[in-house]
Every structure is written in structure tokens, then in C-alpha cells.
Length: 143
Image (cartoon, rainbow, N blue to C red; front, top):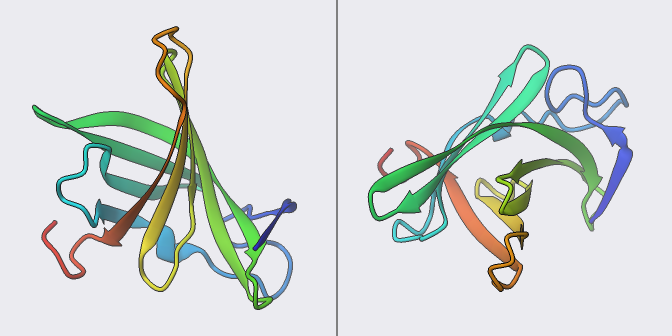
């Protein structure tokens, strides 16, 4: 897969100006982690507000869900190994003590999310890379 940032999807979410590009509308909606016991991100919501795209995450905690807040996101056109154009979504969270970058790429109805977390709080924790998988709420599970 190659990502071509010069072909960033703009205007309405997922509609790149070049002819033949993928409508990334399938990303929109509420997604749930395929692992209900995850200690990371439990669910996410991808929405449009006018022509802007946003993502909201909820992390797992002993007390329930922790709202990470809403952040702007960007859609990019990418070319798959077989030459088919698709879309990928990127977003970042900055909590001060930690910065987390996300990439989401829909694949056959499952939404994999790759996250890179960098700790900046002198805690000695190692930076992490995590890959989690989400399914659309209401599709094969409970919401």
C-alpha cells in the first residue's frame, strides 16, 4: 500500500477530487472493539460536521469508559497492493504526558486501528504500537 498525501481527500469526507477515487463514507458511524476485554480503546465514533471529519475514542478503565474527546481527522486516498484505490483515516491525540497517532483503514467490513503512543512524562514507559480491530455497532454484536 502507498499513501499519497498530495491526494488528500477533501471537500465532503472521503471524496477526493480525482476521478475514480473511493467514497470513504463506510468509515462513518460507531465502531466497537472486537475484544470486549480490551484494556485500550473500547469504541470509536467517526462523524462529519459539514465538510470536516472527526473521531472520538472511548478507552477502557476499571470504572467504565473514558472519553478521550473529539479530534479532527483526515482522510487520505491510498493505493492497495492490487492497484485499487481506497481510503485511510489519520488522527492524533495529545494529552501532554502522551501523544497518540492513529491510522484506520477499513478492510472487508472490519476496521483495524493502528496506534503509536509516545510518552513524554519521564515515567520511563516504553513507547508503544498497538493494532486493534473494530466492527460496526449493530453488526454482529451488541451496541
